[in-house]
Length: 162
Image (cartoon, rainbow, N blue to C red; front, side, top):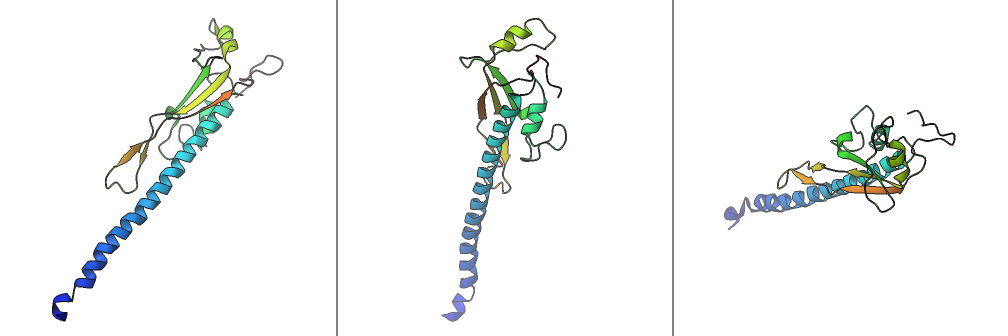
């Protein structure tokens, strides 16, 4: 009987070890997914906060929100760029306000309608380190809405220099 069971423990260990490794790596991937979701939430909060005090349509807000080391590349979550960040200016009812360039006609009228700033992270897919089943997971749109503050206008009426 012993001769028929020589490799049995090896086979059992291979089956149990495979299941154990799948569970361990699944837990690691889930923790990493949750960290990325939290980091993207922080990116939107930080971007909205900076956009409330910087001039309208300033690119500095998205760069600060990304924790960027250089223009256009985020250092907190790999793969997130300024193209994934959308900043919208909203009126009192929550509808987007179309704000032209500062030198264009109608800028002041549109500027005075702004009551809130919304920052969103859009079109981002989280890439798994172990792509057994899904190579990437599309992330939901994270957003943060804050009331406007100075929007780059000082008390004297001058725009801040970014």
